[in-house]
Amino acid sequence: MEITVTPEVANAVDAAVSGANSAIIRQALAITGIGMLILFVSLLILWAAMELLVRFVKDAPKSADDERMGETDEAGEIAVKAKVAAAAAGYVLSKKE
Image (tube, rainbow, N blue to C red; front, side, top):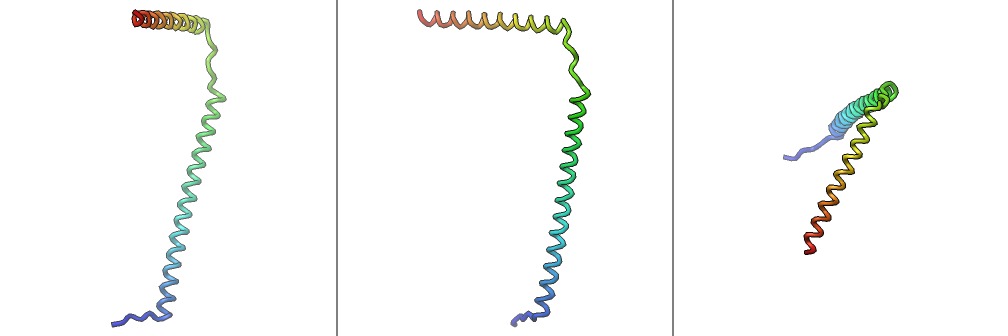
């Protein structure tokens, strides 16, 4: 049993397939376009919100207490560095003997 395809059937199949493919591609492009639009609009909204926060929310001016606290942090850091240096020197001297 041999199957023969007439030109009318071939043309009908080609028309149906090409119409379905173009509709699917058109729908896929529409979905992609909508997704890109949503993405960029949300990025613009996020950018605008960050700009507003930067403009309207300022850092509070530093008080005298904050400056004194910074000085004690530096003094504490120097003390820690001195202790580490003393420990390292002691370790090196103990290894020489």
